[in-house]
Image (cartoon, rainbow, N blue to C red; front, side):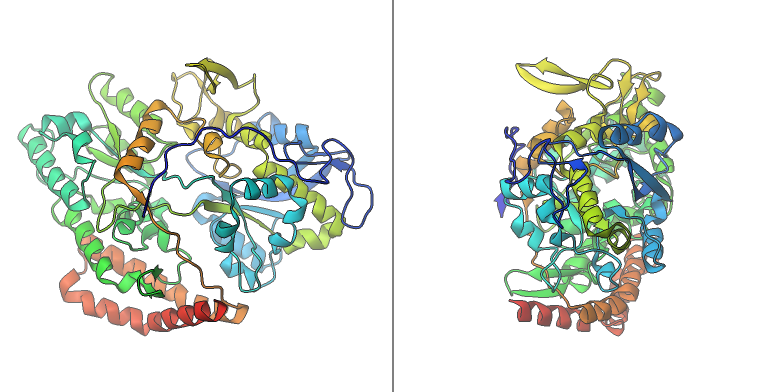
Length: 565
């Protein structure tokens, strides 16, 4: 295990690829003169107007409005590139299902962002092997070379040696989600959260919460029948899987659960000691994980409605002081702090963002330097032709991998929404007066304009990855402090290798995995919420997984991996 590296300083200097001639006219694949400019760190611009269709995952907590198109992020993209984005918007809650339906019906958009797993689409031929076109993507290629990303990209290659998703790429893995607690109440109950987080476990958190609740009941702050933890990102936005909380907790026990089980073929992980794959979902670690998770519900600490409620409900309970612990992430932290102060009053409460507990391992949940990314539909290649398609890939390269595009999409236009300021001799980005941004974790006054709500900047669709300096350029001192503590108290696990099935093998694995994962998720939530007894019903659970071919999935995965070595 290697210790988590600290946040790196910005590495200066741009890498230009040979043959990418700045603002000079470039040549297309067939040798015909192109009507656009491109290059590493050179803004893409088409001499003639062009339209590309693109999918959009519309989040209910910051829904797209007309001003995004008329004066915001999409308008600015068009002003710079002369590319009009024809947007097909889907609710974020069923984005994957709608994308899947569009691809299967032969009517996808050209550009499909916010995709976490492309495996199910490869066999059908509906998406392009994007690795065939990265030679035309100077910003992508420069980042791969600069930060030695090839081993990471190898983890998403298919059995044909190609990859079908352009992933967000990070210089270093960054843990995003963790938990926030009301440290004023913890302290009053006799618990120093800053000392506890140094080496605490989920079992220790359980015991602490028992003590905190006992104090709150004694002080008349809640009743014995009340829950003091009601979490978000687990119910409606948790996709029926337990979402973020079960991902964090499961990873602490070397188990894929919650959000993490999606696309895993049934919790499949790699045992580095044995040199083989196994299912974490029927392991002894899984039993430990669900036993601990259930203890929070069983002992009246964690509200079982966590796994069915909306995020708004969870937020309101925390902001109103009814609960004292809740998940958060770096974009949400300042909003959560502001929400507390707005309702309870400034000076009447304080919260602290912790390094979340460990289980049987201190590893962080995030291990990969890759994250969600972009698929390109085969429809785009068919309708645009080879030269037109390469031109679009140049635009995609700029939109998702160029530094200036990243800054625009994340912060808005320089001088309009933000400017450079000197802080301790270092130039940093700062929003101009009158602006705030929930997506950047930067709060402000009630009448300040939120640049995400108003214009669509700092949304989750089009900016991810990049260098550590770029991806952390909005971090508040509180967030920077959290990452420093991660470096002290947590570790980073090795990234599991990947078995690369053929199309037929993938189809078979998917046929087995879909009902199996549904079964695992249902049983997991039943165990956690106490509807099933972990000891009495454990063997029935194992049998249900075996009846749904979990052993065959493990056997085939190991066979595929051994054959490809």
